[in-house]
Length: 528
Image (cartoon, rainbow, N blue to C red; front, side, top):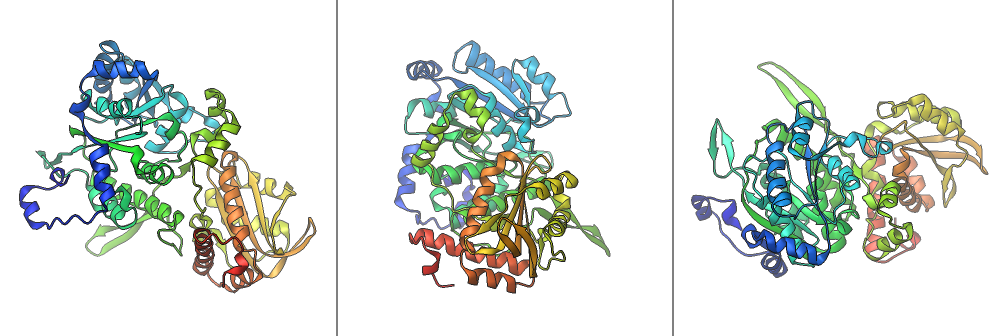
């Protein structure tokens, strides 16, 4: 595999010792293919008929008027009209402002804006959002996603991905890999593409996710999957959807269901170093989050969602702050409208979750941010504290007045097993587009006089859209469990700063993960 990435002079500088576990080599031999093995289209069409499956092709787009038309035309002519391999071609768009829609429809594809699909669940930026929304629209049993910016598009970009799924029943997800030339000062060099993969993802996989080190190009934008797998995993909305897929598939199903196919060469528009910087930041955050969720590392501080960059020349320098957007969409099968459309009973989903998925020991602390924590509350009543907490989260709340009213009117306040001292205020609605967790601490106490609770000292507030209710429940369950001991609450009150609060909650959740690994259910049996 190294021949894909190093030139001959570079090879001489490298000492190649095979240190990887033998099972990775076994996986490489069994699940790595070359596209020429699937160039017999008639054979694949026959296999499709024998299996009785349908195949959907989807192009996620954003301002791709120059290339998307040709890709659609080639796919339609070669794989629909000449050979009935594909059953539909769909473009899912993030809001292009060029002629992408016109070009795609003229070429013969169905065209959708992701913001118009499942609008009740809001809309987020990014390729991952397009992929997630496309699951609702697409009809196929096998779904193939291909980027729309390929300059040397050829049917092999589809055949090499759906072919292994048709020929090998054990495979559920197949990724592309290829040589990626890069253009430098107008000159095309045969290698050098895939910079984020080589500088960020591959080192991280080697450090914390060694099972995935055999994946040649984890960030490749072309892959195909069986619906029964892809509807059961979450999607990160922006950069990093690919790495999230690989980690979660390996976690839930194991490495043997993953395959990869060499598609030779892919030429596309290379991104600027500024764009790659933003991509790297978002991907690294996702990698850290998953590593923390899975107990590979423990994070004891706030992970920022903003990238700070130094700008200026000579003696005039400043720091600019750039928001790097992204959230995590739940498995599509958990969406009621999807289940209704696909006629999937809720009981089947629940049974499937018991048999297949291994829920992560949910890490609530990674969602807390310094700017959403009040170490010392000023308010002394429920109403005053609610207003203070809502004001703290103002920058993340779309309608502050509506959120304030929903919280005040809500009667059910969750408390922890230690009874008083800690309470959870919560409200669901369209006044936020993601979960907003806010923490406030009062050494003096907050008057409650509600549901048998007279006074509390710690207030957790959660604002969330309706469809993220399950994540909210996981956060409350996690926090309720770790604060089931009085000494945990007392130590929390001793925290003086936002960093101390986040670090302490992270520490308690880390202990909770260790308990799960040791099959210890009772928190009281583990020393503080």
